[in-house]
Image (tube, rainbow, N blue to C red; front, side, top):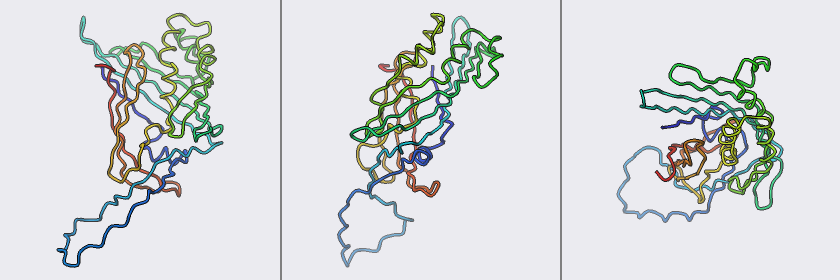
Length: 270
């Protein structure tokens, strides 16, 4: 099984930095280069030089700001027994992130609210479940009971406590959130909702930068980050990402870092 994930709300990290006001980077001090010898051979022109000056990335989340993001997760699988059949699930979520205040040490308190949920599940060409919280509530009566459980997720809130690097250290209000979402639900629905919206899953939903480099980096340099994440029935998964600092770009009159991300999701321990 090879799940694939796409972030539709913001097409690049620089866009995230621009919206959140996270484009703060400070230049590290660098000793001046020694003068070239007077008898040095002339250098060939190889195009514009790429600056090797290093920059320190910091999370500068603006207090009082609110970001609305849309995240789409697509997962496909293929079973071979007793006969080949493909399954697919597509989940689209709209989430609001409101920065409440700064924590001691440079972290932040961020309220995350689920605004909408849309889910489609197929086996082969047959749709097994489809729900959109933005549709008329009256249509829920024609849907499986699980639709009501996804409806209860809308409006649910938790509080994320981050450190100075933007990493979520703690999640508050989870028990109240999951209790509301699974109130009067069937055991099957409780299991499904509990797996899809576990504490660790909620921590991974936010686009608050958690992959910033530990040390200053220059244009062209890369760094890697590994993050554990829940996979529901798939078991524990690990997100292995490589970030590359590509340069600078002007966005909304701000100088933003352009960071390219590539990675894979693998079953932990495989």
